[in-house]
Length: 532
Image (cartoon, rainbow, N blue to C red; front, side, top):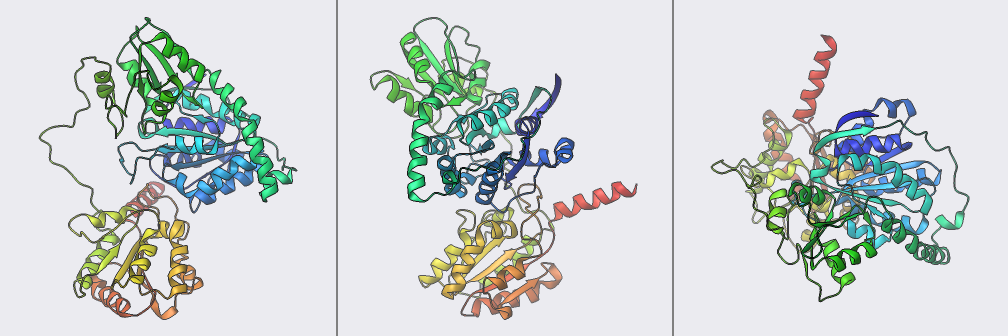
């Protein structure tokens, strides 16, 4: 066995490769991005021809992975938690179709919203779809789980959801790794009725999914990842899931009874055994009170259960050793308190970034109109909401800028301006633009194109060098489609283009196009390294 120092994301990626992976399908999103990047840079993946290009969005990723599964090979789908919303249609239906080759869906949740717009808990998606869920507590477990996850998927003929959180994704630990397995052979599924979800087929498949629930429950009940360690009888018992289990261990409570949860559905018999052995239970879990609510139902309303719902642990944000120790009544030196007497440093757009020139021009022109509204979107350009620009009035979800601007214009708002990035436009903005064209909405759309997916580290953007063609194909008029270069020397020209298109009564698109400063700097360093 070889030992390697790996991020949680890297342990998952290597585990998948060693499990005979044939394709990873993903859209970049923190904290999941490094999984796909690790596979893209892996010599083993290159040698084996593992498919690893970025997808346009999470829905296309999920569907492509299903196609690879249909052909009999193993596929990994990666996304951050909000990406589960985008792929939900395909994800939920994949439990009805079932799978052929193994499919593992990796959802990286972001408690505390370090880089996200909500704290949703992906475990609810797994329960909703009625499929097995895995939640590693350590990097070693994350690596070890991958071959077992694919084997479980193929045994049950169902996708498996693996849920991690930011601290697991982005912390490092020593991991013992073994030898890679061979990839599955090409073996397309011949059971057409499984995959054609006409109502008659779907009803049969749904009954099949229901019939598998006892087997799924038994798998979790007997899983080596769900461990019950009984301590002194009575007192507080602990149910700890994922990273929360590490915080319990750090509190050093050998006399306490602890049930570690890393595979779902919940092991009901183990929970009842713990409840009978202890006088109360504390539930330690990152995210929403998913386990806590279920345990209340399992042991009955009269049994004392504490956790996030009761205020014993914080209701929001990620857990840490300090608040877990406090919940257990253990005094410890607070190591995770915010540093004092340090000025806040809110994030800013990079100096020299093309987005800065876009917002400068947009703000100056917007002042010429009464009550302008600028609808923003998800990306590094969302920082235009902060000083010194304070330029955007909304940012809700991927692609919402165009459709919100259209809805506001439908209500009579003028001017209604949308600002969206290049990767976000191809991810979720194109359909909104088509709606606007079909309705001849009175909006101005700015696709701020920096030739990359900059916010997550400079991954390839699906529409690079295609945006004019896409907009024309969607019906934007050629005379109201402009490409400009966002540099200070072009500021007057850009402002005039914005001014003219705001005054045009219909759909217009402006594409400020200049490479991201960070990706450009990396390219220049790489070129210099090659020459030296």
